[in-house]
Amino acid sequence: MSGGILLELQLFARAFLWGIILALLYDLLRCLRRLIRHGNFALAIEDLLYWIGCGMLVFRMLYEENSGAIRGFAIAAVILGMLLCLQLEIFFKKVRKKLHNSVKRGIMTSQSTQEGGEKP
Image (tube, rainbow, N blue to C red; front, top):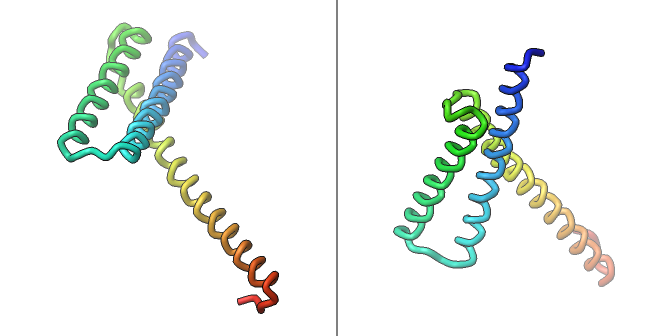
């Protein structure tokens, strides 16, 4: 493998990790929104600041890693990292819901058995 391709793969990997980090930061922002209720204007300002921050962080990464040259594959890697995080979040929500439902059914079955009742 030539040195140029290796450098591009490293840039892709770093950009992918940045995408994951940015998605996790947005999840943190969403958690804070659940704790503290906001109006629509505050939500819009928070989103605007988040995306400005994302743009600055991605630009800084490109500047440091690639002398400021915008590479399409690096932007794609950031987006892919964010999408992977989103898909994992959806997957884990489904798993958590199934686990919750199976534990709940187990508890309900256990309680009805202890009370001497028939299983539903």
